[in-house]
Each structure stands twice: as structure tokens, then as C-alpha cells.
Length: 173
Image 1 (tube, one colour):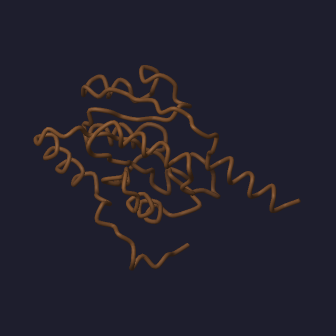
Image 2: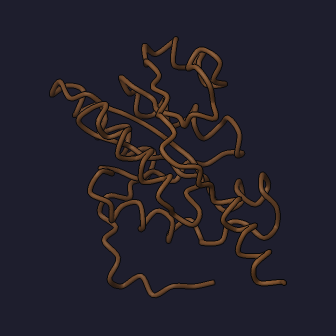
């Protein structure tokens, strides 16, 4: 699937090296940095809730997204539904998102650990399915770099996988 990205506002999409430099400058200015991460495939209201609450935790929100290959490896050959550049552009279009970083690595741990080590935020945000911050797989990195965790409250029960399943089942009576 290809898209004409001529009109996309991509200035907020930065690579990990640029994210590191931007974060260092913002920390030096005394800004509170926040990170969150995910696939963000088929952007929906649950994602918006997560991103808005994450942004409320600080001054600048860095959103890490998984690469296409990482999403495919974790969720199957039919995913992602949208390529990483389209997913990044949709996130970058949101006012609550300050920076989007496509993070290399496998799905589960590498991208979020890499995002944490790149940005070194004061706060990292996860959804309610992840439990308390002390149980997160990234907790050891967070503890080492002095990052606190924030678990968002569930406001609705929407997930991309559930939406995809619903579309498939309603399309095949």
C-alpha cells in the first residue's frame, strides 16, 4: 500500500538520533518529557485517550511507534493495516503529540527500551492493560534512568485488534 504523502506534515517525525538531541536540549531548558509507545495501527479513540493523558503528564510528548516488520512479527502477516510512515504522520497531525519516533527493534521490548534510553523522560506512560509500572518489562530501564511510570485510566474498551475482528466478522455474515 502506498500513499501520496505530499500534504502530510512530517516535521514532528524525527529519527532516534534527533530525538536524543532534542530531548537533551529540552531537559536542559527544564522541560518535563513524557514518552509512550505502541503500534498505533488504525488510530482510534482509545489511542487518543492514551495520548491526551500522556501529554497531560508533562511539557513534551515523544511517541515511539513500532516498525512495520515488528508489528508483522508480533501480530501476524495481515498487520500492520497502515505502513509506519502513515501511522507516524497520523500521530504527528495530533496537537497533543510533539514528536514521533519510529523505533527499530522487535515488538516487545527493544523499541520501548530504546525510546526510554534515547529520550530519558521524566515520565513513561502505558495503558491500563500493563498493570502497575513496577511490573512493566521496561521498569528496570526506567528505574536506572530515573523515569517514573504513569498508567492511564481506561475510558472506553476499544482496541485495534477488536476493531479489526469486528470489521472482519461483520463483513462475512
